Image 1 (cartoon, rainbow, N blue to C red):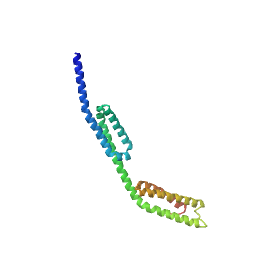
Image 2 (cartoon, rainbow, N blue to C red):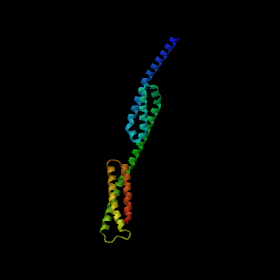
Image 3 (cartoon, rainbow, N blue to C red):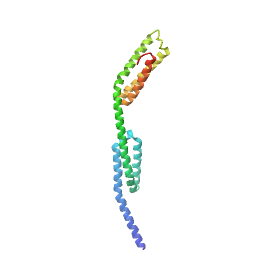
Image 4 (cartoon, helix red, strand yellow):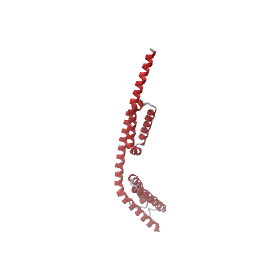
Length: 198
């Protein structure tokens, strides 16, 4: 009877070992496939969905840890959820990349007219400031303080416009338009303070 139990236990161990061995290869393949799928979209994911990427990297690290401990079943059990997460990450990153591209296209279109209009406004303000600075009598609606404020404001506008232009030169039209609009608003404010029509 004792011999039978020993044989039975030995047989069960053999079955378990064979079972483990048969799970090792699929587990290894599951990890390799997950890594390959993540690496194919890593750059885009890092840019647009870094949090999702970090979560997936952690899941892969956990699967590798389980594999190293010989827990192939845990790796295989985690594989479907990991595959779904990678697929979701890829879809989210692709959608955000498309949104960013569309926004960039819009910004590029908006930059064209802005890059002509704002320098003209700056030139007009400069001309008005120069003229008023030489004048002995300021117009009734322009105070000395308003003129002094316009002079310092003009320097600020020029600096802001340089930043916007630099962004456009480097191809970042979204930033260029945001900075350009802020410059335009500031220039409009100065023009009003000097009694100019924008």
